[in-house]
Image (cartoon, rainbow, N blue to C red; front, side, top):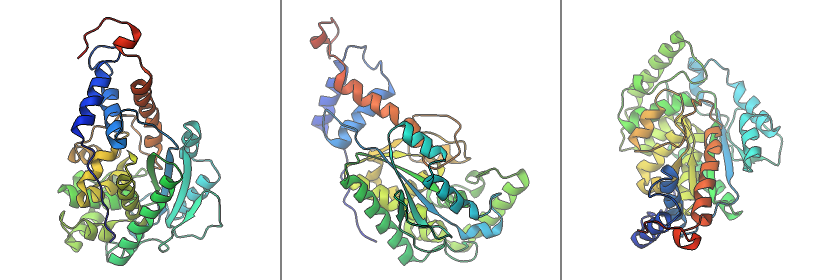
Amino acid sequence: MQTFHIEPTHNAPLQAALVNHINQKTKPLGALGRLETLAMQLGLIQQTEQPVLQQPTMLVFAGDHGIVEEGVSPYPQAVTAQMVLNFLNGGAAINVFARQHSFDLHVVDSGVNAVFQPHSLLIDAKLGMGTENFRHQPAMTADQCAQAITRGAQIARDAIAQGCKVLALGEMGIGNTSSASCLMSVLCGLPMHQCVGRGTGLSDKGLQHKLSVLTSALQMHHVSADEPLQALAAFGGFEIAMMVGALLAAAEARTTLLIDGFIATSALLVAAKLYPQVLDYCVFAHCSDESGHSMMLSHLNAQPLLHLSLRLGEGTGAVLAYPLLQSAVAFLNEMASFESAGVSGQIQ
């Protein structure tokens, strides 16, 4: 796998300057709460007292999963390709929210079991027609896993080269909550029953079947938390592996990462095992209703901005949180200080 050079964002003089800058705004100390810590994080990511948000970009990675052969999803695999076409036609929730919040949107065919016609929104990075059934063999080879990370990294770099300073990652792939649950169990050291959820809407019976299938798969592969790439190859999807590469390349380029829900966070679990400093660049958009996501976030010591009971994926939660980043930057750059406004206050 290619290597990445990710600098920690910590900069003591800059942090002190940002604290002073924030504290001298015309407000009581700490009165803007999480917006203040968010503004400081954005300043540290960009290494400036005046961060700028420009060309927010959403990359929706799509891929199919062999594990659906085991009946772990109430939806057939064909829905992945159908939803990709919905994205390309502008009709999905992520299209609506991306338009609302002026995000550039691209759909990445990481490994969908279908052939698509060329489209201006589609990035063809296909590694195969879906992964293998990981109940019986690894989802992908080590070489495919490395290729996926490399391709995801390049896609992120291309977006950043076009001016993107905020990158959000979404996903589409019937069966991908099964991959995420297995990655969570291995990398967080949690029993499978705490990691498995209903995905796209399993019944109680379906949930028990999914738990049985994934427990069996976990016992077969024998990977540990110290082997994140082996875990990714064993259980991941092509879209999840490409998201790992995109996360690492974006952090390397000092780009703010807006982290979405359960699947996106599972990719981050892998990325953070490889390069813990990637977490400095992550703004956690929301806590989803998919069972296990809150424990994933706790494992990462993450504080999500929103709790909206979302469980859609596609990157929707990440885009919905973006206005809070805009507000954090706006107050930091535009709000008057006590001195400039001629307001009496305790300057610290």
